[in-house]
Image (cartoon, rainbow, N blue to C red; front, top):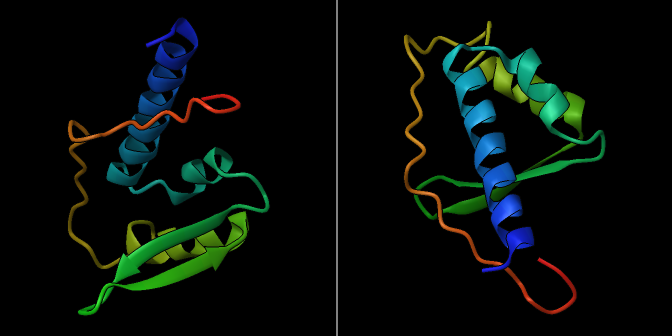
Length: 94
């Protein structure tokens, strides 16, 4: 693995940790800057694993407010991040 790939891997890990720690603190507003304004959050949910999308930073933050933030009824939020897998594409970059 090249130095560039190792640096990218570390940066990804730090981003995931920041995102998760903010979620655990129920700080959806703090998560917002981790996304670009035109970000699209794609996730699977439901009995059939349906794919859903939330387009745009503001909509993503609003959704987080409802699931882990100030509007959430969840009693606690906890993330364990040790299970990350990295796949680096070698053609044209990492």
